[in-house]
Length: 242
Length: 215
Image (cartoon, rainbow over all chains, first blue to last red):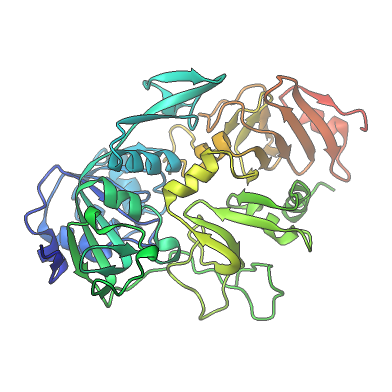
């Protein structure tokens, strides 16, 4: 079975339909599948529910799909960096379901692992727990949260082989590995495409069975959201901004 | 004179212990990393999937794949490890992080914390705060004692909660309080900032609190 597709549009061909749920990896602008997001914009698919920790920034990442009004609902933990988001939300054009970040990560992990629900202390006694089943274990109150499965997951990896085995780089890993497991179909964009045997099997984070389609994006431009620097003269560890 | 932001961070750093794994929130808590005592091993956790991070990079060495939870560019150190968001919050929820230092809008005398939304204003989201306060062994809040003369240390929080009964200690510009969140022993003022008086704290605090004998 050939998993490698020639470009992002081809990698998504036949997978997109209006009203579907899409999981998109990344934290802020780090590790986002940006070329696949651009291909989703170009497809014109509408009324999407998008599961992603954030929603990009204006004009970058998932912010592109806000500009084109293709997103109906976001399931996220934090969306503070985006003016378009605020405008569409306040105008009633966009729904948001906030999940605590760890609960969101675990819902996705659980969905991919065949676990329909789990109990967590996160959010107990807060409005996040309202309307959810709660139980006491060992004297503490826990909230039931549901596993999440998406129609499609799009992820970004640093390296892959043609079998779909994925390796991530530094903090660009974030939500990508869980999302790869929780999509009915998972499409990965990868910076470096190798032949089988060229990646040390001990280093593979996402085994290829989770990945149905791959696209090589060798020239992907990566974005920095907050460029914080240290002065050359400052002593180590001061973390001073310039 | 009350404590400055830097002095509040310096006071918070006294809660660090050798071998601690620590998560620092955005704002004053971030400054705590400047006051880790020399020779003490403290590993900083960033909930986007990194344990053990260093200072900001020098110009030209910034890496888009290497950021902290505030989306700022940071650097790797010799003890760094990377992991997924699910592993990161397993660490947090599973009680493997020793200390979380974070900011707050309101804290109640029973340890309730509100720091994520103001009804009627645009809500940005809670990020990882609800998970941190529910799972980390010790939770320390660093905040201004009052906001525009409105007290922030309250009998009950009026804003939606981030966590119920989760705060162990509050460090403000005027002093330090402990909260017996498990034992129900309430809040106790244990230290005064230089120049702060018991009268001033009484006037600016709605919550009821004990005063430690040393004061």
